[in-house]
Each structure stands twice: as structure tokens, then as C-alpha cells.
Length: 377
Figure 1 (cartoon, rainbow, N blue to C red):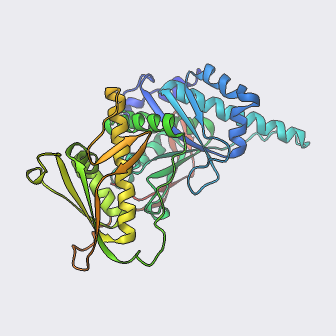
Figure 2 (cartoon, rainbow, N blue to C red):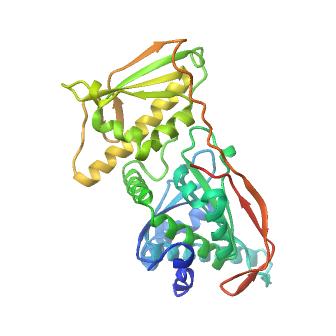
Figure 3 (cartoon, rainbow, N blue to C red):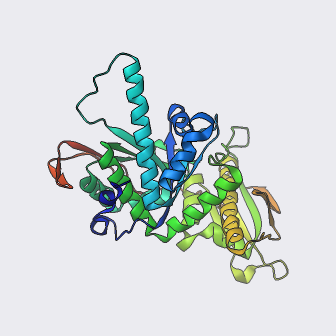
């Protein structure tokens, strides 16, 4: 794809230096019709796309949709250059198919106005925060540079069990691809993205491209009852719950609205090296928090398997075939426990700003509407 060079040119000014050789992973959401176009008869198209682009392409099975949508998941991995090439070829295939259908319906006069195209990505909430930047500045820079419209899903559209947000990039093809290049190049420079890529590819291999959603907390007579839950986990597993600088712990508490206390190492059982993790909140909230903790442990243990090439089993939790079995746990009904942590991430919505007459690669962009979401930690 000769145009790739122009999409990557000047990234050192907007998103850091790039050769196009850095490894990236991107999760795209596509309609069932587009998925069929990508696959082709007996998988012929997807094989050709992989050969032509050099990217590895995985598609969710028929009937497997991204949570709470009717979209299938298209996972692309490889060098930044190869992934951009794959996206270009996919957009080109969609355009050709659309023109063929239009001609078949009797409309053989294509419009002279360039067709707007759209690419929708799904990304972890934390990485989306990196792309948005302080007060929306980073994503605003991407819009000014590319000329595309970029919309990051608002936090108000999410529910507590959503661990990803969508990023919708729209505009004419060159601008869309430039925007995607800026996004992926910026992500590739963050340590968190390397961990995200590793986990995403490992889970895709073991569980499929579409991961099962976190279990919804069912309504029952106990949902609103105050309770405590005690988990006894090996010391090495506690790090997965805490995360870097305690970020995982904060996210779990804020999403599930529970209070979590982790015993100090000085209180650790010397025989089992287990530490007590105590969750306080409503019964329904505890179930959600427990599911989120199990998910963090799965991701952590998958990473350890990739690094060490072997299973890592703890005393309190055993990991077999990507299923987590938490060990000893204890529920205690309590009306006098610590109050539920109701901290809310402060968001600064920046909506409906209009960028006028901004030169993008020497092309003026007029009336490009900027729809910026809230900032996210």
C-alpha cells in the first residue's frame, strides 16, 4: 500500500516517531454484512487480505457479537504498516461491493463527492483515557492533524460491567486512515498497551475473539443486603488486583461500588503466603466485584504463562483452561461495615466544538465537527 507512507509521515510531530514496524493490535467492530464481505467464499477473501497486508486477521464466529451490539469483532495484529494496509484493503473491498450493488440496482452514476467511511474500534477504558488526554487535548490534536471526526464513547453510555469503550473514526478514507495511524502509534508508545496486546492475543487464542461479558448481577432478595466477602489469595495474586499504582483496585471499587481492604504482608499466613482481601458492600455489588477480580487474575496468569511457558497455580486460586476457581471465601452479613466507596471519576465533557479551515496535509478541512467525550482516568 503506497499510501501508507503518507499516513505515517510526520507522526513524530503529533504522536511520536514511527517507522511503521512497531507491533499493534486493534479490535474493530463490523456489521454482519461487512464480516461476510471480509471472509468471502470459503474464507478466500480473508486469506487474500492476510497475504496482501501481512497482518493477522481473526473474526468472531457467526452469531458471536460484541456485547450489547449486533456487530462482530475483527481483530487485526501485526506491524502498524501491515494493520493499516489491512484496514485500507477492507475499506476498499466494502466500497467495491457497495458500488457493485448500486450498479446492479440500476444506479450506474457514482457521486463525484468522496464517500465518507467509518471505522469503529473497541479499546480498554484505561487506554481510551490515554487517547483522550487532559481535557480532551490529545484526541483534539488527532482531529486537527487528520481532519477526521473522532468520537470516543461517553462514560454515561457505559454500564459498570463494560470494560471497553468504542472509538468511532469517520470521514473520507485518507483522513480516517491517518486518524487510525495516530491512535495506534500513540498507543504503541505506552507500556500499558504492550500488556493489553499480550492479554488480548492470548485470550483470543484461548477463548475466542469475543470474550464473554462479565456476569450481570441478578436481582434477588439479597441484592441490597449489606455483606462482607473475604477472599484468601496468594501474595503474588494480590498484585493483579492492585495493578500499577493501585489503578486496578480503584477501578474495581468505583465500578462495583464496594470497599476493598487488602491485609498487609505482615499479616500474611506464613505457611500458605495468603493474604486476606475483604470486600464490603451490598450482596449484588460484591458479586460484580468478585467477577472483576477473577477477570484480573485470569489476565495476570495468562501473562505469566506466556512469559514462563508453564502454568502458575496458587494455593487459594487454581487456574485451569482459562477458568478461575477462587478458593476459600466467606460471606458475612453486616450492617455496620465500612461505607461503600462511591468515588466518581470527574469528567470534563468537551462537546460540539467546531474546527474550521484547518490545513491537514495541505488540504483545508471545513466545518469538521468535533464531538469529544469525557476525560477518563
